[in-house]
Length: 148
Length: 148
DNA sequence: TAATAATAGTTAACATGTTAATCAAATGCT
DNA sequence: AGCATTTGATTAACATGTTAACTATTATTA
Image 1 (cartoon, chains in turn cyan, purple, yellow, orange):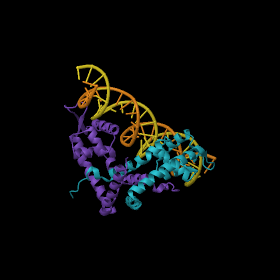
Image 2 (spheres, chains in turn brown, green, blue, orange):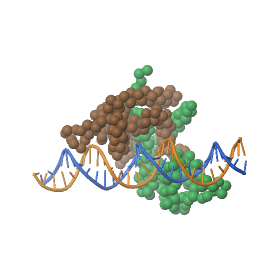
Image 3 (cartoon, each protein chain N blue to C red):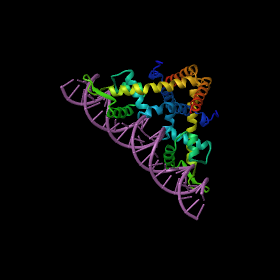
């Protein structure tokens, strides 16, 4: 077996990274205008979608590790975009929800994100985008099944 | 227009991120066995592929920003895996090359990466992988063209 | 040629990714 | 009840991503 490593330009992780970077470039400017990182925005979106989540659940929803989420929530708390509420039944847990300010910010930013997304759909094609999602989901499934 | 944001699970940046994470999980263990991060490995591969590159060119090849590369090269220098050489014609520039140790490390790690890659090809299918590359490259091109 | 602008690279500052250590509260077990 | 274990969350430590500031050198150009 004399197979060698793929050349750089075509390595799988690299291509995925590049693609993500290219996509993010479209969304980041509108976020930065409101002083948000893409991760902070992800958390806000998650909370708008479903409120009163504890940290662990929120981490799963946002695909963030707990230490990252912990810092992000701290930051958003200082900016009063979210609030923590104690849980009576379990003192370790706390539940996170958007403040009115946080919700207001969501309402301002969301339309801009939608715009960008529609742009991408139009230029690239909805059909191809759907196919891409399928292939990616399938790859994820394949890789995770393999975890033996 | 009442289009709303895609639900989380299906946002494009998120799906790309997840996929990359899933792929990296396959490669990271063999790298960690040699105390390498994926970025450090990327630099080593780049230098094995083509030596005597200056920092800027290397950054392009590895899709790293200069500050990141600067730190990585420093680190690899301390580990004596690479060497810097002055360039007479331009004192600002320096040229990077693998040391024998660096090359030896490459030779040890590369086969393990190839193994993982072949595994992925086999489980997922070469045909589908090629299609995925095409779609990703195409998306990148679309997004970059749009930069107006 | 002297002042200015551009270029290569590093450093700084801050946010995140990642693993390990830590802490308090809850659960299980005897 | 008392003690070990597990769990939810934070903190620590280090590498990277990202933008801006900075340094030294080279190129421009007035």
